[in-house]
Amino acid sequence: MPHDGLPTVTRTVGIGNRLLATLPPADIALLAPELEGVALDQDAVLVRAGDEVEHVFFPHSGAISLMIDMANGQTVATAAIGCEGAVGILSALGPSPSAITAIVHAAGTASRIPASRFRAAFNRSPVLRHALQAHLSAMLTQFQLGAACNALHPVQVRMARWLLNLSDHIDHDVLPLTQEALSQILGVRRTTVTLLMRNLRASGAIRSDRRGQIEIDRSRLAAVACECHETMRLEVDGSASTNTARSRFLGVGDDERVSLGALVARSGKDYSVTAHPTNVGNRLLAALPPADLGLLTPHFQKISFEPDAMLVRSGDELDQVYFPHSGAIAFMVDMPNGQTVATTLMGREGALASLSVLGPSRSSVTAIVRVAGTASRISAAKFRLAYARSAAIRQVVQVHARTLLLQLQHVAACNALHRVEGRMARWLLQIHDRVPDDALPLTQEALAQLLGVRRTTVTLTMSKLRVAGAIRSDRRGFVEVDRTRLESVACECYALMQRRIDRISCQELSAPRLALALLQESSFVTSGEAGEDRAEIKAASPVRE
Ligand SMILES: [Zn+2]
Ligand SMILES: [Zn+2]
Image (tube, rainbow, N blue to C red; front, side, top):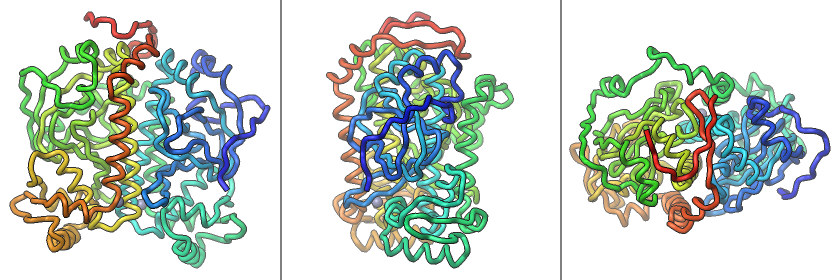
């Protein structure tokens, strides 16, 4: 049974955790007095969804699954975290309830620190912010590849992927996993797990399965699993090593840089950049007090974007932050076989590349315009300066990061659990939220990309939705929908996800909470681009440049 409360072990804190290991002595010294070593017991619950995050955990060994709870009590794992990462680290951006439940699925050890202490150190150390960013981009990668894998690959190969994923975090071939745990991870019934295990045993990928111990044959398991495991491992390792090799992106040569212009040329679309003043259609900006918004507005450029324009490509340096006022941008992940799958949609409730505030970084997503619209654009460097000066801006970035991760996890879970009709209806509702009328500018091609399915499957699914009255017509790149009927056809994910995201946004983007944030965090240490010269900047002090 899962249980709370971890016994504290007495030995000193080692640096088996890779995030901690990358910190220079001065920054580790900020944390060290408060770090304590703890044992991660099998099935222990480190944090439950909805609970305030009390501790940040840095695992040295073992594996922790991040689980999302669905409406019917079902759970699905969306990521596994081991010594390369941390659990609860997003609380560094501000006190907040956890969006996920974290359960130990392979026992190990960790260092933990009270969330408030970590936040204090985080506010003083650009290096810690950088470590958080590396971790977040690894998480984004894992969530997105996971979501795509769930959409594309059968449950048999996904089970093999999870077994490999967990075995990466332990140094032997016996995984301490019950069938119950596997059914929670995959979001399938116990009987399905039994069937899948039997198949894997027949192929030699599982050697034995007794009393909650699964003995695997790694190479045979790898032969059965989809390529997603290897892709995920390489990408997550890649983000982790950018954390150590800071120069890799801090000293990007001009030749390595892909300019926005080049991207536009590649996608065959153009932006019309106009100089008219910015009005605040973006919900994050709208939540900012005038003084804080005033730190940004002088640097905004208003742009309009056209369908299929690529705003950023995975791996590109993030040099612009976009606040959409209208339209919809899809986050896409490219699979090794060239297939493209959408993992989330962002409109005026979000900001593209906002996590670049934590330091110069490369994008972990490809962002493509799905519905034309407008946005305010600001250079990442200017946005970082304002972020350092304004607790209110830090608060909206935090809220946005959490809603984004929540949406990614929901999509991953939905892809694992629900049929293509329900998922298509969910995407159509998400797009409908971002256009003014019932005619959605969507080609079958675009829908195939959103869902990660073939065109023929799109045609078939659309005809089912047409029979149900949820789609009225589908002509010349426009899908006309009947919202009420669409809602009745969609899986419960749309309503559940919307409710959870609205709760976060309403509670935390309201003025009192922002005012509180301003009072609580009066100062924030920022640094030059190279992270060398540190200077303290008082919150909400006027910008002079
Ligand atoms: Zn896969
Ligand atoms: Zn769903």
